[in-house]
Length: 464
Image 1 (cartoon, one colour):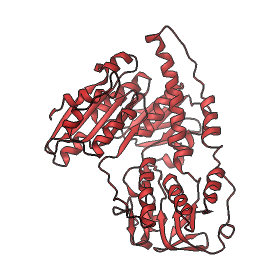
Image 2 (cartoon, helix red, strand yellow; image 1 turned 120 degrees about the vertical axis):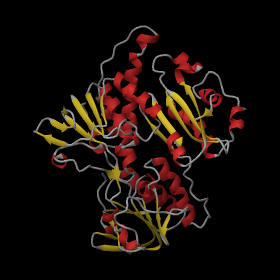
Image 3 (cartoon, one colour; image 1 turned 180 degrees about the vertical axis):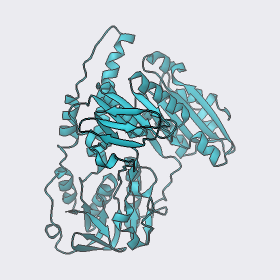
Image 4 (tube, one colour; image 1 turned 90 degrees about the vertical axis):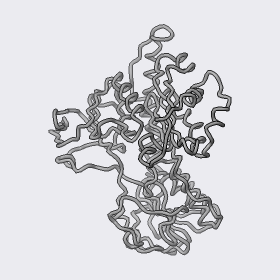
């Protein structure tokens, strides 16, 4: 982390046109764009400028996944092209995370970039004390034009007896390690939990995933959950689903996690059960928002109230970097008076970077049913597609489409398989633009590609 700046060093007058509270991806984008547009902008954050994604999330975790997948792919040579053996070593990717992604968790470059754009940065914890005021330490700063809230989320820690007294890891800890633990238990079978479970298993850790819901990736289609579960099983990951942790203890060297019907022990414990916004600490009551709320309510242009905007995780529209960046563009346009198109959330894409990748956009089949839609579904099994059959080893996957049968458009889709996140691109366009199904069926799909499986799924659309 770069050296902290004092408030008086950063700004001689305790006011600005815009105050950006939280300098993660979206906040940094807003602050930089407004500063470059000539506005007097102050950015505030107690943590690293750039936020969770470049230092403890998307970027380092995908570097780890990439390295782990290289190990798995090397082992597939035995099925395709001869023989091979590999010895895992976390050292190279741990060094890459330090040197290429995080600058050893120093945000000096990001701070200097923002200041070079004309912005002023304060290292500190900001608290709202009104619609146009933010307190940092003993100083209150006022915003002449508005305040943008982009404070993101922090790892949630469930109230499991004993957990708070143990040296558990969150994603902020596990992505700084230089050697894999001998054994790793993971609380949470969502995207973060399963990605890291598979990666560390491939680096040699004995991994156990503990999920309270009846399956991992519980928010995704059941087909996706089954395929990823099978993939983790092949990598030696033990999954206990439908098994809420009841107690956690640590004896100085080993964690013990009590489940309803068994005991799990591990050298290390990762808590990956979700994220929390901590709105009460942010002071949202001063702008008329219930401090007990989970998220900040926003309108189509991301306004919470007059002169206050919010974006990113705190809005509850999806804890994704691409969501915060999308919303940032709308906020910038609105503050600059450029009449932005209101935000749309019917086609939010999401990708879990396991092997195979599990990607989705829009509604699942169950969500569409819950909305009362008359639906049709179409499924194509990736191993049965031409490219999937050619791919052979590591070709597990499925493409599933959910159609609003009355409107004749796709309202959701799932792509699981090799490069599943890339295949999702065509599906995201179809759902976002509400492309009629007959037009999709009339397209020319390149052969033999993974995305051509979409054509197979379209052909298989049936009443569900």
